[in-house]
Length: 319
Image (spheres, rainbow, N blue to C red):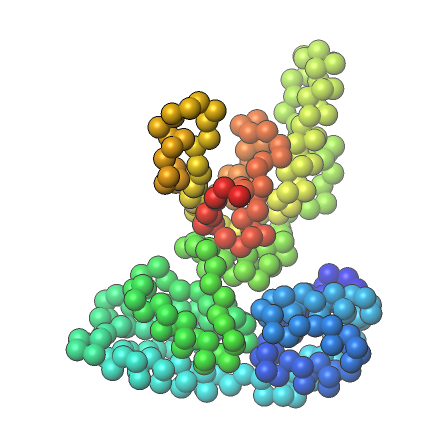
């Protein structure tokens, strides 16, 4: 089963609410009863989907099989946008008498939600609204940074109940660019952002070498530059990266010393520090470090794992 079919099946399954998933998979009749019994449907939906994709790969699912699943999903009323809006609005209005909720549907099954928050005693503040983008039939929503913290639990509850998911996934991932966030969360960046150089062999690219240099040094430079480019390509891919502006690392560690009576070693509280990398396009900047000779290849996994971990806030503690 190639990646295109796997991605199509994955997206189709993600559309299905968890309470409908078993019924639809049985109606699909591609996976056997014994295979379905190996799936723990009480896990997070993402884990369930990964297990199901693995089972489909074992059975070598074809595009015809994937299309059949899509047809079954179309025959079932899986998501009612009108019901979602009504449910979401009622939940907020019951909890907060004064709240204004507006919706705008867009392409890709997304709905933009504007919420002006008030309290039981104050009118909604229309000048400081919260913006939410929810992708229907998924456990993911993107919120603006202007949201008041005290309303976060209520918003999460409203999204969870209205979307009929058992939970809305919270991620330590922030950016001003919705398309980049969406590409990272849905793991689309290696496809939607791929636009150039993907088939150019390393040997055909300019290595920037001085032709008057000693031939042995030239050879060593070529080998090293090719190694760096190969590692960079394996790590980041050969396509533009999603756009993030920063990555933040909070470190907590105990000071270790062999000296007796060390003040820092006797300190009960851990040492804490905050490290923040900032750039208008952080991932592209990280990708360019080794080829530019600024850093060794490969870079630290703490820097290269950002898209795969789907987070740019990290907390690092002693094991």
